[in-house]
Image (cartoon, rainbow over the protein chains, first blue to last red):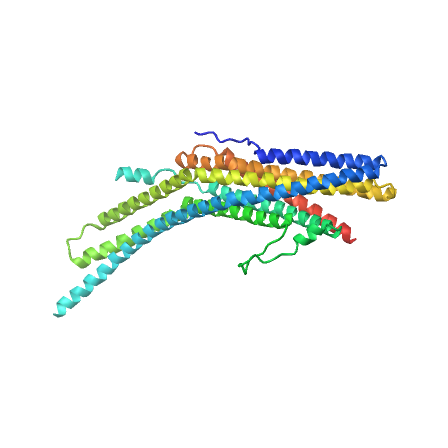
Length: 124
Length: 307
């Protein structure tokens, strides 16, 4: 049996995102430290720089989501086709059961038809 | 005939693993949607706070325009992240929904109800009755009732064996041929969870930094600082629970292809165990517990705010 991979590898984009967010976090920690040390002007500068980085991170998250949606659309369509085929397989088995039930019914009807034919023949 | 009866006598397909798969995928769908609901709410709240603080570009981004020649479209000079999160959430839900539907259809194909023994017993009885009457009506030299009954039973058993075999082979064919599609969907699901975790952490970074800045404000009273610290701790505790839920979701998507593969080997050999299917089911239960806990926390917080 084939072994299915449990581990995963981060994509290049995920690695970049992780580094950007680590830098942003470091910036936030530096800003707070400066505020606690009573250096609000320096803290403000760091905050402003960090805001630009935050805007870039937001854009990248949005891009990752858009990219994912593009890939998912294809997969959703593929799975929808798979589901249609499965529905057909279920319907096929049900249909064969119905056919068998109908055959038995037809045999019963044949019996009636023969009885009627015999009556008609007797009259003639 | 003996060969056919042999097939009819082979072990039935157990529907339990298929039901477990459907339940697990429903939990996955609900869990992913709940997490993205949280991300959507937080990105929207942050956007409102930033726009209200005087970020002109953010206000402009909210003024939607109509794209040329598209009476039903909308565009934004700089689409807000929360709108992208909403679209992403919808896409993730749709992907998970086709997976749930797929598992449900596998369940139908594996169901003993599809080829029910009672249906065949009835069929044999009906066939037996009809044949006896027809033979009599045709006036042919009638075979003994017992012989007609044996014929009815055997022919129905043969048909049952044929359908059961068809059911099993259709199921196996579906499981084997759809393995790559399930692998692809599971990879996408896992990737969606990692993107969700990134977006969630991003919102946490913003909120926690805001709380920490409040604590660093020298003008804030001691009780005010304590309240801000308490909020920061609650934020941390919440993130830890939310990230744990996402980790379980991620593990579940990673386990899905192996669980799907196990279903095929289980149909071919019912004696084999189903550890990955069980793992999926347990993950689903753990997710449910974590979300219940998070929802309880929210309720308590809301009640605290009201009082």
